[in-house]
Image (cartoon, rainbow, N blue to C red; front, side, top):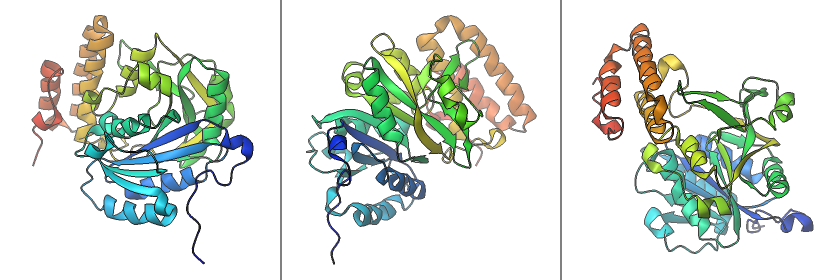
Length: 341
């Protein structure tokens, strides 16, 4: 017998059918296995209505050839494929979209393509940006909707991020604090037991962690999209700074999302990729110049300490990159960096 067409909210109650529509945006870059795992977790979400846009950032591997059959198998005729150019005029009469981005636009730029499609849907009330290496738990989205309904001034809401390999430990309780003098980040609730998540609900945050950002439509319309010039790292902090006078930030402790963390950039400090190192250091200077210019002297001192650490780790070949970042952080691109080999 032929399987019935996919309907992401066919099994929901009448009450759930009245919930606001959320567009889920997932960015893929050379990570089809993680992306398929994420969309399978999305399929198990309960108590919420959703549509899904997977944006492929011009992957150089077999991602597209793996994602297409996976989406057809799971969603059938509810799935449609678009180019980035087609997004500008696309109808939003399907539930599942695979978007082929024209290039690798980085985290912000790649996700922005999917958000633009979501904004074309007049029924969209929220957009949920998820890293492809996350596994949202079944009640994660409904918990976000509950939080949003109870706190209408909250324009962006974070989830409880748990380590996928250690799900009883918190990676981040919704958001993080940023030390403008050192450029260092501290995730709220880091490495605390999952049972303590609710105790961080009232703590102030500087930004919502980008692995799971639940964004109200009004935020998107009034603040705009993320600044894609950051490419990778610190774009969430910039985004939240831009919207802080219009909206509050929130946290839904019961929205649980497992996060594998660091799959595409290198996770261990001694093995961090050149790309991750470049954008982490360059954007630390950029975010300071834009939002905290009075703290530039201490951030530059911190860059000198970073240079000493690279020497200690046997990474002296990265010192010219650090020097060029310090001189040209407002204009330098990763393509301008000379790397061994």
